[in-house]
Amino acid sequence: MHCYRTVKNARAMRIPFLAILKDNGSSSTQYLSMQESRRSHQAAQRLQRPARLPDETPGARPDQIPETRHARETWGSTVSPASRRVHSSDIQNFPQRGHECQQVASSMPDEIAQVRFLIVGRTGWIANMVAELLEQRGERYAFASFRLEQREACERELDALRPQRVLNCAGVTGRPNVDWCEDHRRETVRSNVLGVLNLADCCASRGIHLTNFATGCLYHYDDGEHRPTAEGGRPFTEDDPPNFFGSYYSRTKAMVEELLRSAFDNVLILRLRMPVSDDLSPRSFVTKIARYEKVVNIPNSMTVLTELLLVALDMSERGLTGVYNFTNPGSISHNEVLELYRKYIDPKFQWKNFTLEEQAKILKAGRSNCELDVRKLLRDNPGAQIREVHAAMEEVFRRMQAKGVKPLAAP
Image 1 (cartoon, rainbow, N blue to C red):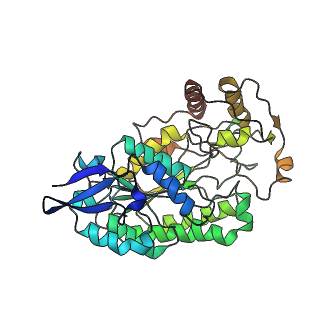
Image 2: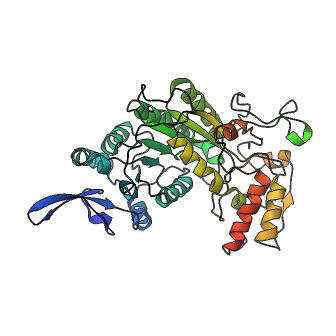
């Protein structure tokens, strides 16, 4: 008989996600759900974890990969509704105890041992938003405990948990911003290039679909056909070659994207830009520009996470692959965003503008400004609610106001 329970003191457990308990002389395998204790458990583990790099934290077997990216994947679709409500815990100290986890997991029934989603980037902003959505949907998921570049640990964990899909939300972005990457190039390459390729290869060799949360900061407006659309230009499509090399961060992202799309047919690449959440998280684009003394005023594509993360999970489940510009349609300027912030959150808010030339004097690395063409995203997700960016951003601020979000404190 298989029982389920929530364990609140996970640190005392020898094997984080399993326990073999004796009951009336017989042993029964109990899957330890971490749904209620996940946040407190993560906080405790961060205190013990060595310093990490600044990060966002962010294939099917050859004969099972859908023939077209529009086909719905069928493998892994037989999980029972009851088992979908079981949540895997974080796997602590996995590199040291991976053999234990693998040995015990191999003795479990398939519907218990296997998780549907493995999230890479356990400390990250987007990773935890994805986890919340999976919890709301009653999905079985786990946070990976390995770093992207740790191949042996990655292989052990994939073999132990046997996820059907991996969601990579990890990667170096820099703290407090991408200028960090200019002085830490080796670390940036190790995570953003070597690490992502390592994960993609480990997944491909096991027939696992990988969704890679990437960036659309590969482009910049020019004086030709890629002027802002208000000036008669056209947005950048997925097939346009990158033309922005002003930051080392963007260069590594362009490099790994080209390698992924040319060598791996199990990977879905989602290009996010200037992501926005329904709060004033330090990682949200709204919070970032509201804290600047001066901002440029340029129209840009943006990703409203409340709408698009749901689409990302659906695309992963359908087994789509290839590159997608992953933003809301259209573009919105910095001033338009700050006007919404003033309208809904802080009526007294004021800001100043400056030029790109003035901005360049205070930054180590350049910044991408562009609009992405999302016709492919809309075409392949006809039933998804992906609103034009002005309408989507207005709704973001309305939701924040309804929740009673307070203005940011003065810097």
